[in-house]
Structures are given as C-alpha cells and as structure tokens.
Image (cartoon, rainbow over all chains, first blue to last red):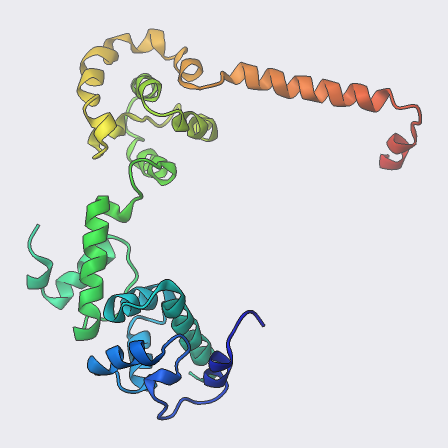
Length: 90
Length: 178
C-alpha cells in the first residue's frame, strides 16, 4: 500500500452511507465547510459530483481546487479516495 | 468567440468534444468547470494541441495535413524554418526523417505560432522557385549536427568497441556468446 492515511483507509474500507464530507480523505474542517456551503453536505453528494465527472480524477481534482481552494495534495487525496471507494463498492 | 456562459449545455458539450476533452454531462455543478477547461483549451489554440514552443505533437498534425503538399516545397520551407527557429526542431527532424519526403513543415504558415507565422510570407514568395536546387541540401543544413557526422560517430564507437573486444586476451567471452 502506498502512502494512504488512516482516514483514507477508513473511508475506502466500507460503504460511505451517510458519512459527512469531512470523512473524505484530504477534506478537513475548512474545506468541508466550503463544500457544505455549496450544498455538498454529505460525502455521497461529493461522490455524485465525482461520478458526474465520469470518475476522472484529474477533472475532479480541478473541480475541487476550483470550488474550495484546495491545494493539489488535498484534492488529489480526495479524488484518489473516491476512486478507490468506487472501485470497491460501485 | 461567443460567450461560453450564453451557450446551451449541448453547445458546451460539443465544444468539449471538439477539443478532445473527455467530459460528463454539462449540468449546474459541472458547467463552471467545463467552461474553464474550454477557455484554457481556446487559449492554447484549436484542437487542444500543446503550446507552440513544444512541438512534438504538432508534427503529427502537420503530417496529417501535409500529404497533399509537394515534398520539395515542404523540405525547403522547413529548412528555412528550422534554421531560424530553435534547435529543438532538429531533434524532431531526426525522428521524422522518414516523413520528409511526404510531409512538409510549411503547414506552419497556417499555425498560430508567432515565430513562424511572420516568416511564412517570405517562404511562399522566395523559396518556391529554388526548390529543386535546395532540396537535397535541406536535410543537412537544417540539423544542428549533420547526419553524416552522427553516422561517423556511431561507426567510430562501433569500431572502438570491436577493437576492445578483439584485443582481449581470452576469447572465452566470444565463445560464450556463440
């Protein structure tokens, strides 16, 4: 396994259900609040956006950086987290 | 260029396809992103090709559009172009040496490249009459290091290696290879 955080492993290990946005890897309090302000109040809604972008991590990273001001590392981490979750459960 | 914000979702989708940008549905949450992508793609020029400075991909495009141009014409124009533009071109010429006969670089005229576009009018007027004479010389002078020099170096290295090999006291390595 590469350098995945505990948060990443926790998220990817089970169905996300009703987990909040902050449960996503790379999304902390600041970014989480910004996402909630835009209506992405649950991880599943962010998943919806990821799916709308056809699970393209690059596109999603660009979108996240644009929407929340996330840096490359945070956005990339979130994208990778969602991608792996999709690979496992979708 | 009409404003992207005024376009319908289908138009945005079509534009994305034109630039070769893979995309999902254009909905409220994705529209902003796609508009940005389109603006970036337009800034780079049509067909989502890379910036004029790097031309690895551009050559492929030129090859496609160049089939119907005369070879002699293309070589001459390209030669002049390369002499004036960066030495990077010479490396690509090496890779595409086989395509010289069929392809030409004069397609640069049609490109947006600042460096080449202003030179193109000169080529069309002056260079065409002298094709036949300059064509044979074109490949050599357009390279930074002439081709024959490269062949010579290669042969020199090959000969050197052979000498080293043959001067080894034991011939076992040769037998092992056999």
